[in-house]
Image 1 (cartoon, rainbow, N blue to C red):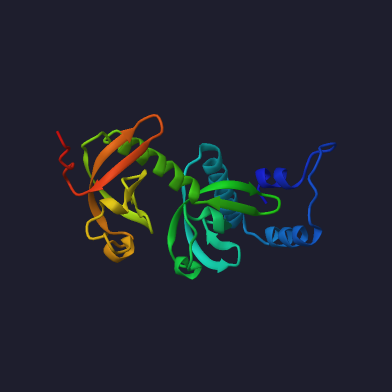
Image 2: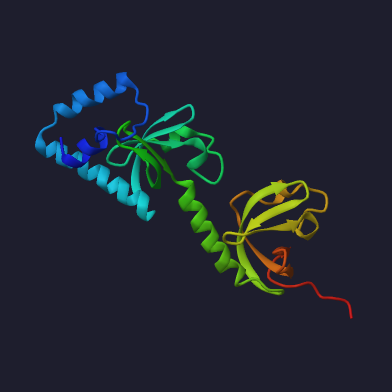
Length: 219
């Protein structure tokens, strides 16, 4: 057992300790005692890499091993847990589809003594979305023609993703929707061309019309 892992496991005289689960702790020690020096060094290196990733907020590659009721078991060089609310910006409806996939994750919590390790993918996606939103807003002004993707369809229109920001395309501005629902004309994920009809920078409220031209205004 390496000196650093030994120091993590066995506190010095007079040092305060956290409460440990005896059953799991004893099993862990039995496995550790059987490690060869090479395996011991490899294990210490994996924990060192995990600790560095946590401190520096750098990403690790996780392989999804299996789905459980509240998330997924993943492998980042050590077993880790990815909870259901930390895998994406939206709920994942078919958890089994992620099994076998490689995901970019961040370490959010770890404990060498209890061998617990928790990771998040949502953190990375949120940061990426925020950067995209800043870039997208720089292109928004009245009259700007933009490409977007239909994110959500409602009875009153379609929410269009302009690259990290969403804006409403009202049903009255969607062609062929006079007597039909937006879902009968557009599909989620469909790419559309829209024109910015209005933009309020203070509230970031964007008004869209369908197509690449502003309507002719009466004189």
